Image 1 (cartoon, rainbow, N blue to C red):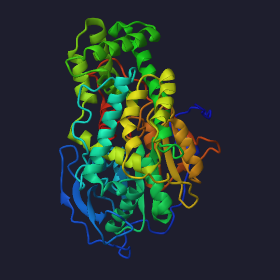
Image 2 (cartoon, rainbow, N blue to C red):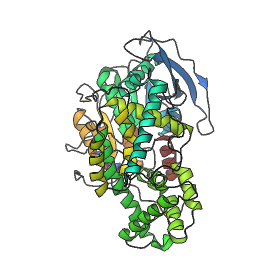
Image 3 (tube, rainbow, N blue to C red):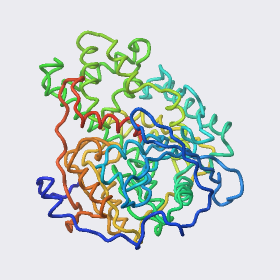
Image 4 (spheres, one colour):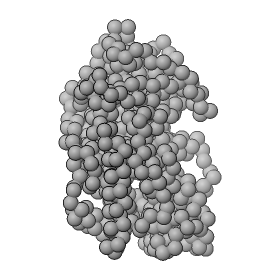
Length: 527
């Protein structure tokens, strides 16, 4: 992984020394009486939750096909936390990624997590993208598709490979049977046009936007289609726009394998608690021995090899899960106790109705956005080669995406997000992020002229702002508040140190850890 060396320094010095004020584009960024409104005013109603007591909700009809505005309509579910400051800066649309993640709660999370003075100046607006959650129609192609126990993900025999192919084909066929008329319009370009419909319904000339993960690509596509309607745009954990989507998933396989090795090394460092050995190689051997054992006899009748991978994959997104995963690993490896492993699976890996819906939209978007290989021999060759170097979840990830080999809707060409017409965009990225590897942020910075890249050095968590790193949060707040971005003249504009890793105490959580867990509950795994 190529990284630019930037000296580490205190957060205050970084903010004071590197941040330069950038004037806002246009005299008035706010919702104004003269702004065009193509919809009747949204009917906002209280939809408070205990976590987010100021949340309001509304619904917005949009065209299924934006090229035929008077044809069939679908409905988007919206949420917001209203501004309270007289220094109003307009709407801030937020998206947690996916694709397939619901975004209603994200408005409440962002409004509660930003500094109060910054959040007070925006209407923070969330939304369930088309097909997701409370938006209608909500897609669920094949309920129970990931129910346990699935075939071993590694196709070591022809029978296992056939079983995987049969499941992938069945999922694609179920989607075609239920949603043939909708699938051509479930993709990033359609979602970006939905964003603009939300802007228009809010009566805003321009919007600010804050997206995580896949939401960074959605934001970049929106900016390409409507550059004059972007006021500010912050993108956290950045998708590689040149790798959409087959190559991006192969890159993930290597990155998640490295992140899993980091987890196993952490277990080795805490051998006094877990008694699995001080040598990371020995701990790794014990983990793969556990995998082989549950492949033969699923733990509790529920956790086979594929489910074990599902359970440990979230540890690649967030190291706050490591203590729970290590306890389950140690209990099984040392005592053959299956209950902690089953509990970990139920907490992190098991699917529910929301998962079925999210996966259906994930597949619909990814398979529509860009071409995928239609010859299974290409998948087999690429994933066999990758698995030899990165065995943790390569084949698990292959089967997750395999419906795209059989998808009924013809793919589009990936969007070219190159853009010279935007105000400065703020990119935020962990150097060791597995879900959206670091190189993608560097690529995005090159494509968005004037963009600024802030990295969390040594950070492996997916989602680096509003989750416990005060230095990263200061850059985000300064940008949303005053349009300030850091400039260094190099590939990276500013660096923050990663927070310290977790301690081996599952019940020991502070405010930062709680915020980190809350954020990862909003971000979809694999997105």
